[in-house]
Length: 74
Image (cartoon, rainbow, N blue to C red; front, side, top):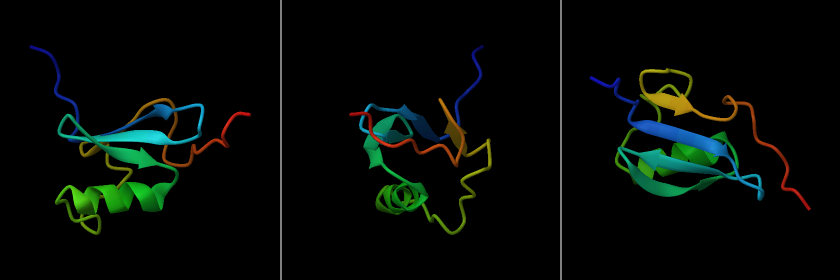
């Protein structure tokens, strides 16, 4: 049986510097920083104050960690 992913996935940075956010398999937006991630969680019905963004059981960071927000490429 395959391991389950956390409910929130922050995908690798795109060329624009944003990172796609999915909650329970649904794309909820393109974040450009931690504040955006919290806002998308709120909009998806999760309380960002009770969700620790660095808790690997809740949030999976792909292609960089919580501090990896590259500038857009030209």
